[in-house]
Length: 235
Ligand SMILES: [Zn+2]
Ligand SMILES: [Zn+2]
Image: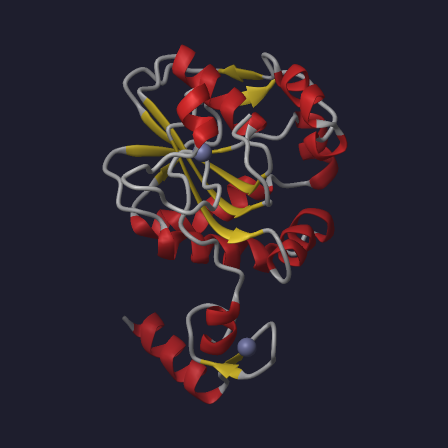
């Protein structure tokens, strides 16, 4: 209570400034209402892979998902992967700006659907990359979701191999690169899991992890990500 009043007084005396336009903002996020509206929000699309698509009739899935039945049951992506969101993601990953993880995580928490009894699993980095970077951006993005009552399990799975970054590989090589890339360390039998990640590109990483989790007994696996790159394809 006292803490809340201190916060309110501090915000009134020293309003935070928007990280995009420097305008004063009383928004809990560090961006102003105007810039918030102008963010590259992803239009509604396929419920399974979030590809933006014109909705035809009652179809909620794109053609590729209907044909392939991917292991991921659902994808929520907030933004198109373009400015300023792409700069935020790179600022977090490559410059270690954890204030960006907080902002991105808060945005995700604001838009995450209500889910009962789900376990949030940040997509793990291989230990070599974790040592190099010093943090896992997916875990940092997941943290603000705790305030909505979600549990985070950052230890239930790991990357078995130090795979080249997916973005450096052509699409065909990605599947091979990820075959058996993950190990599930403890039972997830009967769990509904939500994977948390920064960017959904082809979905191959997330689908590979979803497959491993389902083999280990998970009932449903969905993914909540910050951004989706353009282009269809769930694999
Ligand atoms: Zn602004
Ligand atoms: Zn789809």
